[in-house]
Image (tube, rainbow, N blue to C red; front, side):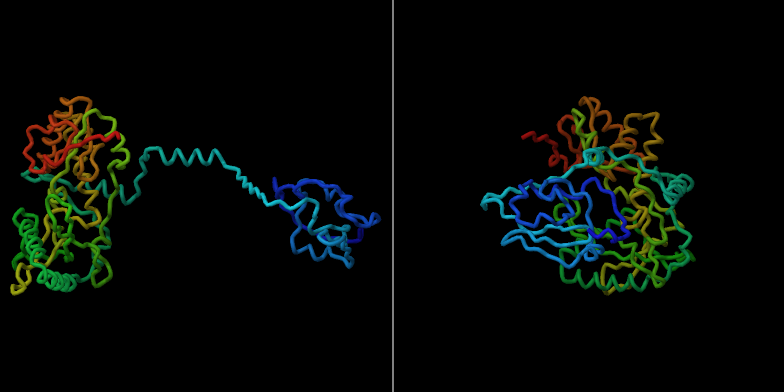
Length: 420
């Protein structure tokens, strides 16, 4: 050993470096090496924990000139500044074809348990952001009701509205593309035209005459159709694109606030649904289109359209909440909550169900008895119809709850609990 050797090292303290080395203890007499040399580890043959692990930065500085080979398939003695060290194979046992591999991993039980709880727990209420709070306050301050009972709402507009550019040219180009597609598919053309005719007939879309022009900021939405063959009502649905950029790079959705998600998570609703003896479901027909937009803001929901390519292109305003605009979901569900709040004294249970058991426009709820279910169903329908919302596609696990309904789709909806 070289007592004059000196090196400054930094170490990390670990509970365990590796398993004991060597794997098993053996008789040191099995190795033929000089007895007068000083070993760095006198207990090299004993299976013990590793005390210090040196890295390559110091390893070669320890090496000295001097090496002794102990024989074929035996370790080599290497001289170092801290004594002689042994390394290499030790052929002390007969070879064996049986191999056993063992992998041990220490599992953090606390961490696994917390992860399990997070997966199984019901979602908690989250705090609203500043923008979401502004949307809520905007709804309270600007919402009113028309003579027909329907809600009239104002879009939550950002201060960047004035930065929106021109969008009409892009809308006209899209119309040309749609017309070209429809000319190749007569069935699709009929469905597209039927959808637009219904929009006009129901008052959800109004033609803009020359004398109707205003100085309001205008945005022209693009539109196209989505085919859903599984739908029992409408196969072709025309959807509107409020994310198309204007000449300044901003779209309508860029200047609208989205609003918070105020309904319970679907998981929570389904958990409650499974607790009822008697259940029933339904959905609101054309939910978004039952809520009117303030007249002064309808120029933000313009489209171009014509039923015949030979006609002059016409401009229309969409008068109701439009699926595809950023705040549409918030506004529609917030109107639902407002209906519940307005009727909480007259229909306390029905109001509670509207607040807790709607997922967008789908009602998913139940009761302990058939009589209760019938009562809740009647009360909810009365509250919603007063605001123009019509519940349809009723389904239940008991036919008695559905009695009295004339929904043409009713017979196709019956809930069963398959326990197989």
